[in-house]
Image (cartoon, helix red, strand yellow):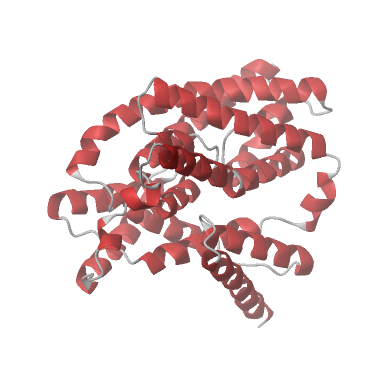
Length: 352
């Protein structure tokens, strides 16, 4: 009974935050509102809970929203995006080494902890590999927590403002007006197509979790729904489902923030602020290179370079407009590349 009450109030509080921020027209407000409200609720009561298995379902939905944007034209353009992804991966690896070294040089953090904390990776992944790489699991996970929150709460807002200001200055329409997907442009959606898209996405997502591929649920869902859309042009999902997925995503992140995180923040305040600054610089340096060298559009360059979770950024990208498939390709290349190369590189640099 207590578990059910805890679940009920967690959902209720998160839904309130999600609805409030969405109504305030804050970019990605449904996700940000749920994240902040659930974090505060969990910190104050310690009762925040939600089935972790929901993450797979949400990733599959995020993948479906990406997949429904993929057209034959998009497929031909994704090759250039993949090249840009490898360019960004090189930047992210260099960023991890430089920032990790800087943190260890001017703070009390040891080099392994600093390198793991600087990795542009997900929270759960950071926590899992930290001890294996000789890092302090508590410190590295805490730093990664605040870096991720900053990447989700602040960097997308800055990127959105940059895009809109540049487009306005050149007399071009805003990103949201330029890239609305088929399912949002047309009010009449076939219930059969919606159910088919959702069933295909979730089935592929569940299959992807057993593949061992990083972010497998989302990757398999993207591929399955993209095939459906390219082949038969039947992929579509209602906007309300995206808002629900954003709410649950924010909830799942928010309930990971604890009072211990807040208490320990004072001791790690300088490293956290340094990480914020470095993440911002990295975002814009990578964006500039992708925009100038790889010839990717501004939106894709900015949002694809934000060091946050693959599915999280996919949902934010679909909410703010732009080419979500391209953003996801960049994020996925970063995710796979970092976890393929970085652990061995950290071992080498720390003599582990």
